[in-house]
Length: 223
Image (cartoon, rainbow, N blue to C red):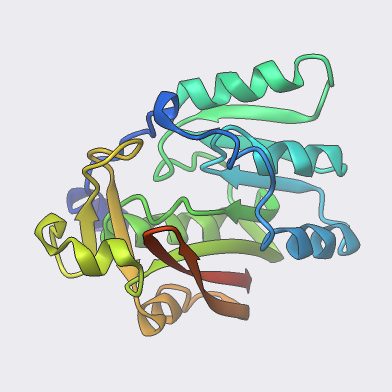
Protein backbone atom coordinates (compact mmCIF):
# COMPACT_ATOMS: atom_id res chain seq x y z
CA UNK A 1 0.00 0.00 0.00
CA UNK A 2 1.37 3.40 -0.95
CA UNK A 3 2.42 5.71 1.89
CA UNK A 4 -0.30 8.32 1.36
CA UNK A 5 -3.12 5.76 1.55
CA UNK A 6 -1.54 4.21 4.62
CA UNK A 7 -1.35 7.61 6.32
CA UNK A 8 -4.97 8.38 5.42
CA UNK A 9 -6.14 5.26 7.24
CA UNK A 10 -4.58 6.40 10.52
CA UNK A 11 -5.37 10.13 10.54
CA UNK A 12 -7.80 11.74 12.93
CA UNK A 13 -10.67 13.66 11.38
CA UNK A 14 -10.02 17.39 11.03
CA UNK A 15 -12.37 20.00 12.45
CA UNK A 16 -12.53 23.75 11.81
CA UNK A 17 -12.19 26.34 14.56
CA UNK A 18 -15.38 27.89 15.89
CA UNK A 19 -14.45 31.48 15.03
CA UNK A 20 -17.53 32.86 16.79
CA UNK A 21 -15.81 31.87 20.05
CA UNK A 22 -12.42 33.38 19.17
CA UNK A 23 -10.98 36.63 20.52
CA UNK A 24 -10.36 37.93 17.03
CA UNK A 25 -8.29 40.97 18.12
CA UNK A 26 -5.33 38.71 18.85
CA UNK A 27 -5.57 37.22 15.37
CA UNK A 28 -5.66 40.53 13.51
CA UNK A 29 -1.93 41.35 13.70
CA UNK A 30 0.84 39.26 12.12
CA UNK A 31 2.78 37.15 14.57
CA UNK A 32 6.04 38.81 15.61
CA UNK A 33 7.96 35.66 14.71
CA UNK A 34 6.79 35.95 11.11
CA UNK A 35 7.92 39.54 10.46
CA UNK A 36 11.60 38.68 9.78
CA UNK A 37 10.46 35.79 7.57
CA UNK A 38 8.34 38.19 5.52
CA UNK A 39 11.33 40.49 5.09
CA UNK A 40 13.56 37.57 4.11
CA UNK A 41 11.10 36.31 1.50
CA UNK A 42 10.75 39.77 -0.02
CA UNK A 43 14.53 40.09 -0.27
CA UNK A 44 14.68 36.71 -1.99
CA UNK A 45 12.06 37.95 -4.45
CA UNK A 46 9.71 35.10 -3.71
CA UNK A 47 6.24 35.78 -5.12
CA UNK A 48 3.84 32.85 -4.91
CA UNK A 49 2.96 31.85 -1.36
CA UNK A 50 0.51 29.48 0.31
CA UNK A 51 -0.87 30.52 3.70
CA UNK A 52 -2.03 27.15 5.01
CA UNK A 53 -4.54 27.40 7.82
CA UNK A 54 -4.88 31.11 7.17
CA UNK A 55 -7.58 31.76 9.78
CA UNK A 56 -9.03 35.25 9.42
CA UNK A 57 -6.14 36.42 7.31
CA UNK A 58 -3.60 38.25 9.42
CA UNK A 59 -0.69 36.80 7.43
CA UNK A 60 -2.43 36.37 4.06
CA UNK A 61 -3.43 40.04 3.98
CA UNK A 62 0.02 41.18 5.11
CA UNK A 63 1.68 39.07 2.44
CA UNK A 64 -0.66 40.39 -0.26
CA UNK A 65 -0.02 43.99 0.78
CA UNK A 66 3.68 43.28 0.43
CA UNK A 67 3.37 42.19 -3.18
CA UNK A 68 2.97 38.43 -2.81
CA UNK A 69 0.56 36.36 -4.88
CA UNK A 70 -1.29 34.58 -2.07
CA UNK A 71 -3.38 31.45 -1.87
CA UNK A 72 -5.16 31.32 1.49
CA UNK A 73 -6.43 27.89 2.53
CA UNK A 74 -8.55 27.08 5.56
CA UNK A 75 -11.13 24.51 6.63
CA UNK A 76 -13.41 27.21 8.05
CA UNK A 77 -15.78 28.90 5.60
CA UNK A 78 -16.50 31.56 8.23
CA UNK A 79 -12.80 32.45 8.46
CA UNK A 80 -12.44 32.80 4.70
CA UNK A 81 -15.57 34.96 4.52
CA UNK A 82 -14.10 37.26 7.16
CA UNK A 83 -11.01 37.77 4.97
CA UNK A 84 -13.14 38.46 1.91
CA UNK A 85 -15.07 41.11 3.84
CA UNK A 86 -11.83 42.78 4.94
CA UNK A 87 -10.33 43.03 1.47
CA UNK A 88 -13.39 43.60 -0.72
CA UNK A 89 -12.35 47.20 -1.43
CA UNK A 90 -8.60 46.62 -1.60
CA UNK A 91 -8.32 44.38 -4.67
CA UNK A 92 -5.59 42.30 -3.04
CA UNK A 93 -4.14 39.29 -4.92
CA UNK A 94 -5.56 36.56 -2.69
CA UNK A 95 -7.18 33.34 -3.89
CA UNK A 96 -9.22 31.29 -1.44
CA UNK A 97 -9.34 27.54 -0.96
CA UNK A 98 -11.77 25.90 1.48
CA UNK A 99 -10.15 22.53 2.14
CA UNK A 100 -8.66 20.48 4.89
CA UNK A 101 -4.92 20.96 5.30
CA UNK A 102 -4.37 17.30 4.40
CA UNK A 103 -5.79 18.07 0.94
CA UNK A 104 -3.17 20.20 -0.77
CA UNK A 105 -4.47 19.72 -4.29
CA UNK A 106 -1.90 21.85 -6.06
CA UNK A 107 0.51 20.81 -8.80
CA UNK A 108 3.98 19.78 -7.71
CA UNK A 109 6.51 22.59 -7.22
CA UNK A 110 3.83 25.30 -7.24
CA UNK A 111 5.03 27.65 -4.48
CA UNK A 112 8.09 29.76 -3.74
CA UNK A 113 7.22 29.73 -0.05
CA UNK A 114 4.68 28.26 2.32
CA UNK A 115 3.49 29.46 5.71
CA UNK A 116 1.80 27.15 8.20
CA UNK A 117 1.60 29.10 11.46
CA UNK A 118 0.04 27.12 14.34
CA UNK A 119 -1.74 24.98 11.77
CA UNK A 120 -0.32 21.53 11.20
CA UNK A 121 -0.41 20.72 14.90
CA UNK A 122 -4.20 20.38 14.49
CA UNK A 123 -4.06 16.70 13.64
CA UNK A 124 -2.58 13.56 15.08
CA UNK A 125 1.09 12.76 14.37
CA UNK A 126 0.22 10.75 11.26
CA UNK A 127 -1.84 13.62 9.84
CA UNK A 128 0.90 16.12 10.67
CA UNK A 129 3.48 14.00 8.87
CA UNK A 130 1.24 13.75 5.82
CA UNK A 131 0.86 17.53 5.64
CA UNK A 132 4.63 18.03 5.85
CA UNK A 133 5.09 15.49 3.03
CA UNK A 134 2.57 17.36 0.88
CA UNK A 135 4.21 20.72 1.64
CA UNK A 136 7.52 19.30 0.43
CA UNK A 137 5.89 18.11 -2.80
CA UNK A 138 4.29 21.45 -3.74
CA UNK A 139 7.26 23.62 -2.79
CA UNK A 140 9.67 24.64 -5.54
CA UNK A 141 13.32 23.64 -5.40
CA UNK A 142 15.15 26.09 -3.12
CA UNK A 143 11.77 27.30 -1.86
CA UNK A 144 11.22 27.86 1.84
CA UNK A 145 8.55 27.04 4.40
CA UNK A 146 7.93 28.54 7.82
CA UNK A 147 6.29 25.86 9.94
CA UNK A 148 5.41 25.79 13.62
CA UNK A 149 4.95 22.76 15.86
CA UNK A 150 3.46 22.55 19.35
CA UNK A 151 5.98 21.49 22.00
CA UNK A 152 5.39 18.96 24.76
CA UNK A 153 6.55 21.64 27.19
CA UNK A 154 3.18 23.37 26.72
CA UNK A 155 0.85 23.38 29.72
CA UNK A 156 -1.98 21.86 27.71
CA UNK A 157 0.08 18.72 27.03
CA UNK A 158 1.41 18.36 30.54
CA UNK A 159 -1.71 19.25 32.54
CA UNK A 160 -4.43 17.31 30.73
CA UNK A 161 -3.31 13.68 30.41
CA UNK A 162 -6.95 12.57 30.45
CA UNK A 163 -7.34 14.19 27.00
CA UNK A 164 -4.45 12.26 25.42
CA UNK A 165 -5.43 9.83 22.67
CA UNK A 166 -1.88 8.60 22.03
CA UNK A 167 1.70 9.44 22.96
CA UNK A 168 1.69 12.67 20.93
CA UNK A 169 -1.92 13.81 20.55
CA UNK A 170 -4.77 15.09 22.67
CA UNK A 171 -8.27 16.32 21.86
CA UNK A 172 -9.06 19.81 23.13
CA UNK A 173 -12.20 20.21 25.22
CA UNK A 174 -12.53 23.98 25.38
CA UNK A 175 -13.63 26.64 22.91
CA UNK A 176 -12.77 27.55 20.22
CA UNK A 177 -11.12 24.17 19.73
CA UNK A 178 -13.54 21.64 21.21
CA UNK A 179 -13.01 18.31 19.50
CA UNK A 180 -9.92 19.43 17.60
CA UNK A 181 -6.85 17.17 17.81
CA UNK A 182 -3.49 18.71 18.74
CA UNK A 183 -0.13 17.03 18.31
CA UNK A 184 2.79 17.90 20.59
CA UNK A 185 6.38 16.97 19.73
CA UNK A 186 9.86 17.15 21.17
CA UNK A 187 12.87 18.54 19.29
CA UNK A 188 13.97 15.15 17.98
CA UNK A 189 10.53 14.42 16.56
CA UNK A 190 10.42 17.79 14.81
CA UNK A 191 13.82 17.21 13.25
CA UNK A 192 12.82 13.75 12.08
CA UNK A 193 9.58 15.09 10.62
CA UNK A 194 11.58 17.66 8.63
CA UNK A 195 14.19 15.15 7.44
CA UNK A 196 13.48 15.81 3.74
CA UNK A 197 14.21 19.54 4.16
CA UNK A 198 17.30 21.51 5.04
CA UNK A 199 16.63 23.21 8.37
CA UNK A 200 17.74 26.85 8.17
CA UNK A 201 16.49 27.84 11.60
CA UNK A 202 14.76 26.05 14.47
CA UNK A 203 13.82 27.70 17.75
CA UNK A 204 11.73 26.58 20.68
CA UNK A 205 9.97 29.56 22.23
CA UNK A 206 8.07 29.47 25.50
CA UNK A 207 5.47 32.17 26.16
CA UNK A 208 4.06 32.77 29.63
CA UNK A 209 0.48 34.05 29.59
CA UNK A 210 -1.88 34.50 32.57
CA UNK A 211 -2.46 30.98 33.92
CA UNK A 212 -0.96 29.41 30.82
CA UNK A 213 2.39 28.42 29.34
CA UNK A 214 2.64 27.97 25.57
CA UNK A 215 5.60 26.39 23.83
CA UNK A 216 6.19 26.00 20.09
CA UNK A 217 8.99 25.15 17.70
CA UNK A 218 9.42 27.78 14.97
CA UNK A 219 11.17 26.30 11.96
CA UNK A 220 12.37 27.79 8.70
CA UNK A 221 13.21 25.11 6.16
CA UNK A 222 14.39 24.88 2.57
CA UNK A 223 13.65 22.28 -0.06
